[in-house]
Length: 477
Figure 1 (cartoon, rainbow, N blue to C red):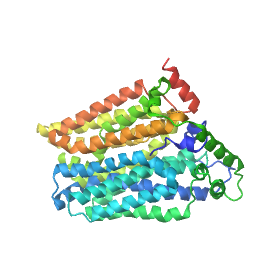
Figure 2: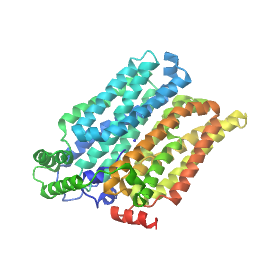
Figure 3: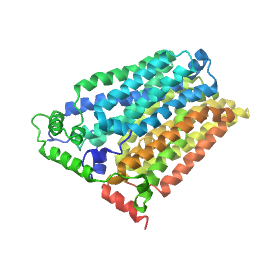
């Protein structure tokens, strides 16, 4: 999961938030000053946390049968285990912003890595459901912090012409971590897979010793000299940083003058449509079934009569390249077209998978069941990865004005994690009730997503933040 709702505030660049996203993927303009190596290395260290996020999310899919068999867990116990990661992340959604502001971006990343390491070790050493659940909850809390602080840190250290491309790496590494966990989980035991989750945490902890703290956070806490040192290190010793340093100071002073936003402010007419768009996108992103399908992919394939490992490997191999395609298309085709294509694809994927289970239950065309099931799940994952996965986070970062961006973004993120928990917890029960019914319900949710995007979501590509706000408000009149 990538959280970008604070990046324009943090960068003190209120008019370039969208423009930065419109830059070509990782373009370095000729003649621009700065130390590209330090920025790229710092980004690489930070996205080790994103990789950890993906590893945690992908863990439960290939391990379900092994964990249930070794620890004698019931379906309800395993469903609780699978969903606890989202409960931990929901709690983190309330605290991650304050933690990152209090102990810094690097401090928050260290804290998240510590929680994840403790969680993975608890899972590895588990002899029953309790220690397993504690470990899952701890990793969930850790990735909840990671999901907030990593994109914020990247946005705060990157030059404006690189910010869009570099922040996209966050989502890409989440998908990569998830896919690798899927693949490795088909080869090694669930305990050893838990140990592999510790590796990116250690890489993050070690790397943090060699990268600078965010110059914008340093300025926010009154450490102006340290902020300039950090900025100099990021831009290069011969770079002219006076303008950017002044911009950071102006941004910090502007933030200090603003009164604290209240929850009731979100109900005002000038904000309500933006809130509906962001919360709606986050809700529809989840109720289409992504966390149930990804957490329990192996079980889904087995239920359709396919070897779990084969289906899981196919799932893993398709996710990363499609995410890359989506990152490239986002700034070419626009947000709305990607969302419409993506939601339509997830609808068709669920419809195919539900049809496969229906045919299996009726003992009809059994030779087609595995083909339809695999095609349906892979169509769903490819479609989700190209649009519904990354685009809602980008739109959320664009549509809120400065004054309420943090509060409204937190509400949208909380909605996202609540939806993730509801789907991941109920998926196994829904499958026990009716396999075809489960996927037909998800297909109905995806159809509603198409309607929501078509009727409510504006196109934000190529517009300044002021133009987006003017467009949204004009539709209220």
